[in-house]
Every structure is written in structure tokens, then in C-alpha cells.
Length: 231
Image (cartoon, rainbow, N blue to C red; front, side, top):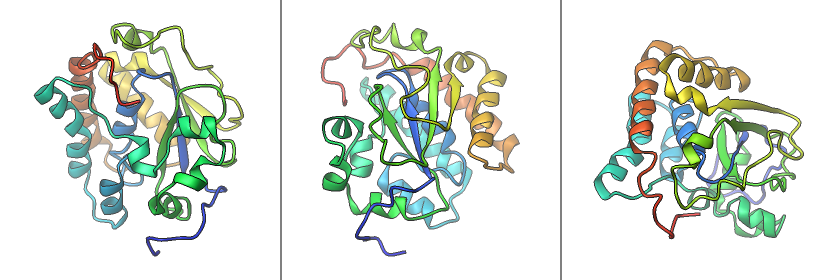
């Protein structure tokens, strides 16, 4: 498929929207899910390489670990960003429902016109910003207060509804599961099932997921005492 396409395919069923309030840990969950060989990172460079094939779980693990290692190195919050990935984010769509058409990069058009890989975006409010993508999948985070409250510059009163507006097809992810290895792995595998993805490397994933889980618990407060966060 050529890199440049003339249109967005709004009927794609490969878009997955993560629904959660700012600071609840959704990018961490996405990185864990992207260990699967059919799920892309919210990063154009890595996603382009992954879509070419022969992208091993070990490499996905290194990409998922990079934000943690960088956090520990620089003492700031680090994450892969939707705007860099797609050219826009849900805040732009909240202000202008057609912001994706006006702002998206060519890679976003390519993503919506392929049917092999799932790709993710995030939404942090209840305004249904991705309403023009009727076949999107949605994952709703729950039980995240323990993550948000220690992050001192996050408003804990601004929370997302448990059922996002306009999402007829959604599943939930229990953030309390991060506290225990088996529960966390079970939640990740549940999302794979929801997306109808098989995984032949469950044993390999188990150790890698636990490493990511432990690094999240070690680093999730880093950088959240600043006022210039990247959202």
C-alpha cells in the first residue's frame, strides 16, 4: 500500500480508542498491548517498521520499556503522543469534529485503509470525539484513582464516564490489576480476546508484562509535579 492516500477511511474497524481521564495510565496499557504483533505503538516510526513484518516480541518489549528508562534518566514524564502519531488528537476533534481531515498526516490515512493491524488513540472526556468512526473499538479504564491521586498536577475531579458516549462496542480494563502479576496478565489477555486476537507467545509475554508492570509501579509518579505536561 502506498504511503500517501487521498482520504480517511472512517469505517475502519482497526481503530481502538482508550477512554480514560488524563493521568490514569492509559499509555502504559497501550504499550503493554503493543507487545502483540498485530497491535501498533502510538508512534509512527515504530509502527511503520512493525507493519513491514518480522517484528519480534523482544523488540516490542524494548520499545515499551523505553519510556520507563527515559523517565529514570531525566526525571520527567515520558510517553508516546497521539498528535505526533496521527497529526491530531482528541482535543482537536473536541473543538472541531473535522480536525482529523484538516490536520492528519498521511500515515493516519494509511492506517485507516489497512485491515491487519490495530492502532490506538486516546480520549479523556465524554464528548464522543471519534463519533465519525462508527466501527471503532473502545477500551474503558476503571479503578484508576490510586494512580491519579499521587500525580499532583492532575485534577482528580475530572473523570470519564464508565460508558463512553456513542460507544456501542467497548470493554473495560481494571487498573487495580496492575498491583498483582496474575490479575494484570489476565486483563491484558482479556483485551486480546475482545479484539479477537490470538497469542501464541503467552509464556514469553507473561514475563515481559510483569517487568512492564513492575516498572510502572516504580515510575508512575515521576514528573507529575510539573505544570508543563505534554497534553
